[in-house]
Image (cartoon, rainbow, N blue to C red):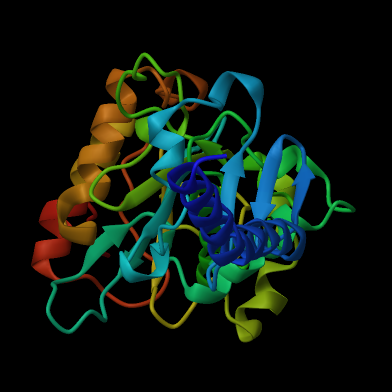
Amino acid sequence: MPTSARRQQLTIKQLIVFIGPFILATFYTISIHRTTHSSVVNNGIKYDHSSSSTQIIITTQQHNNNPTIMSDLNHDYTNDDYRAFLFGQHPIHGLLVLYCSRKKKKPPHFQAPGGHVDKEDFDAALARLQDTSISSSSVDEDSSHPLLLLACKIGAARELYEETGIDLRNDLHRFQPVQIRKRKKDGLFTTSCVLKHRLFFRVCFTDDDFVTEGFDSMVALGISQSMNTEAPMLMLKLSEEHQGFLFEPDPRRAVDLLVQHSGGKVSTALDMAIAQGEIKDVTASLERNEPDVIVGHPMSNEAKDQGGVRLL
């Protein structure tokens, strides 16, 4: 073999000896990474703990290449100040709205149940999604953001309980996302129930959700009857933030009642939901009487103008 060829062969051998360990080390590192950062698959959702914040990767076949889902992997929702509200409607009496007169920077006004979604709500949602023993009925698998949607359901249920005493915290399947705009072609739930970092849900109330007996004895315990003139025997334990409530059978009138709540976003969302046929008018189910009394604190003139309530 010529000397030049022998030298070339020697150089190649030296190169292999030099870079070989680095190649082996690289493959070993990749193998360890895949083994250490294992994931759990449940209900078509992959929970990857390979970073400080848990990633949720949808593995359902039809969502594998969806860019909306893929962009959601590492998002920290707690920095976005999300809020969750519900339009709770009784099939006979109408929409439940709460009366508030203790906001420092606002005149007395009406509100829909709901409020801020806390970090604890996201933690609870993540725990539910990871727990295989919990029913998946509260998880919207066709949502592009399952963690956000479930956390907002939990937050809305918590706020409902704190504000009214109605306890649906273990019945999250009753919180249905409200379609306030036409769904995009991807057909994903979350995009149709969000307005300015506020998610909206619909709940159909029944008589069993309320206190229905013993009003006289319940007053001492903070139980309140509705502000409607012919108040149905459906009572609530209101929080200190609220001083009354009423049922509004006409959703269009409820839009006007809620105009000062959350910067007008709740009123706007309700109007959009009505346009989409999500909220029904139940005036035909009830002989309408204009509310003219309030149980609790008297209203200001602003509230009377807004709510059409006449005081005795």
